[in-house]
Image 1 (cartoon, rainbow, N blue to C red):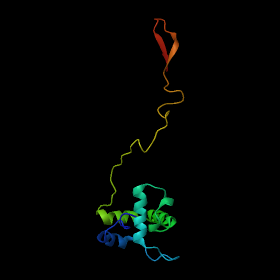
Image 2 (cartoon, rainbow, N blue to C red):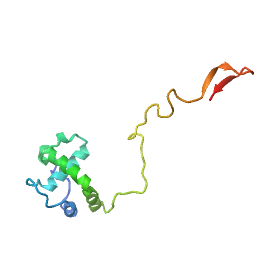
Image 3 (tube, rainbow, N blue to C red):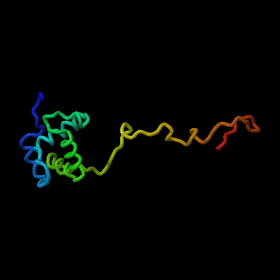
Length: 130
């Protein structure tokens, strides 16, 4: 890898470390700093988890730790430790690039409900049916 393996400086790591879960049973724990750097790398690149560079450890460890800590709310604490802000905002905006509407979502089957009739009214103007 061309750049340093770790994404966080020593000072940032000291702020993050107290919020990480400790005391889990099981196999020997992989270095948290390396795993978090792997998670950040994968989130920044947008690549599939399977394409995680081996320098960060097994991709399954990287993904499982990200998933487990997401469910436990660890990431909110980490973000707060790094930014000093909880990141929770009072308003939300949804952009159409993320929520796609179906092409016929604006009306019922066949489009709008008012159609021009083939019949003409008594005065010769086209009649519309509701």
